[in-house]
Length: 177
Image 1 (cartoon, rainbow, N blue to C red):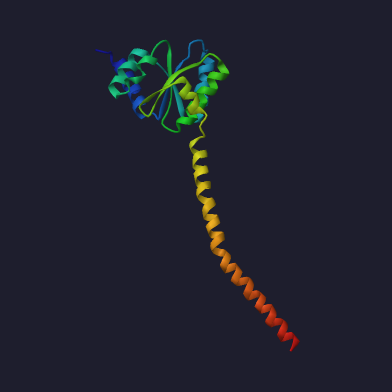
Image 2 (spheres, rainbow, N blue to C red; image 1 turned 90 degrees about the vertical axis):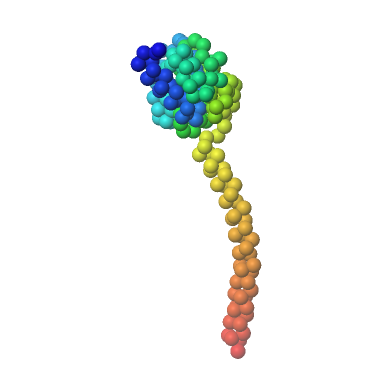
């Protein structure tokens, strides 16, 4: 029977695993407290978080939430980078920090109930953000609409030019008479 403190931690980790859009498991061994704090601040600016977790408690939480696929990654010191927002942003921040620090290593991730490898997390980090994808979709939808408006206004514009030309003709005949 776990102590009340451990039961609370298991519940918190369960909540993270079940509600996060992505949970990236990292090995933080060798990072200083200042480095971890700086990384946490950068994550919080983008609505993501970092939490150092105990592997045993995380394994129990994963079993309770049906995300036991992460069990093979729970070796050595583990920290979770997670967000309920855009998973691409969290992946970009984690990969960027791992490259800069050269100490933090990415073990893998839990994404939509699936286990991702470290290479998959790096691939996820190269995707455009949600906002960029939405902008591309809107731009793609607008282009044909602008073309349609242009095509439909062509005959009306042509009629306008004919009427203006005829008015000039009649105006010229009125002056000549």
